[in-house]
Length: 303
Image (tube, rainbow, N blue to C red; front, side, top):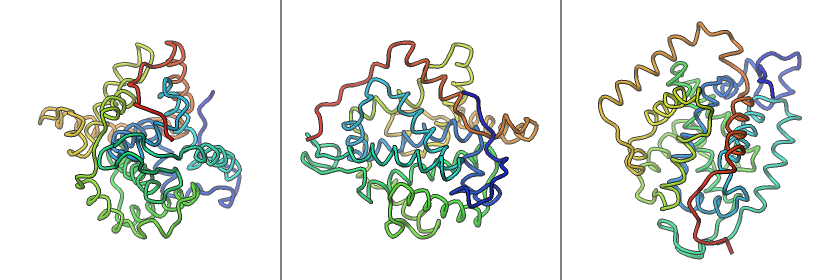
């Protein structure tokens, strides 16, 4: 599948949920580097909410194809952020149908959540957590690899994420109204002892985030991408997953980020901006070629 440039269109702004030249989220997620990396960062942080993580894992039908699932999710999100309303509505309808099956109760305790705790893809609290890891990861990757955002841009970006959440049925009333309120909520959430990784999450999240099945020539680039992802993770997250991070690691991360920001302006626009379908397809094909991915077993099915 050919990659598509997302910013040139003869259609008016009303044809998009996130219009070209207007939406900060479109600017952020239209960067190929952001689109390639923010999902893995979001996955690592997201795995620290045991109820959301375990409920999702119990409900998925692609347990042995986690990279295919990640690629499918990334494509859907890029379609919503970068596609037309018509394209986005089709993708949203697919997600809504899938989410109708993400519900049940925990067969055994997961973190602070006891056995029997109920979960649902439409639980506003769990939906807010999912939106939060996307929002923080998109912003963090853009500021790391492209440029810092001003306070007003961060606010506009957050309002776009609120709209994004609404499209997935998260009520606006359940979301922090401003970026400042979100940042305070986020910082408190990250410091909460309730955030933990289950045994399954400790093994599964780094596997999917850092061991993508790419062709041999792409592996050096993958190593660079993985280092950047690790460098943008909050220290608490690195600590939970046992990711060693020294001053040397930080120095190389800062050098990689600076090089990305410095060289980006010299790249042709199609290399900088657009959808990443072709790259996601490479990962999916790699997983299929090797017959799936050996993943840790989850203890039981949802009831």
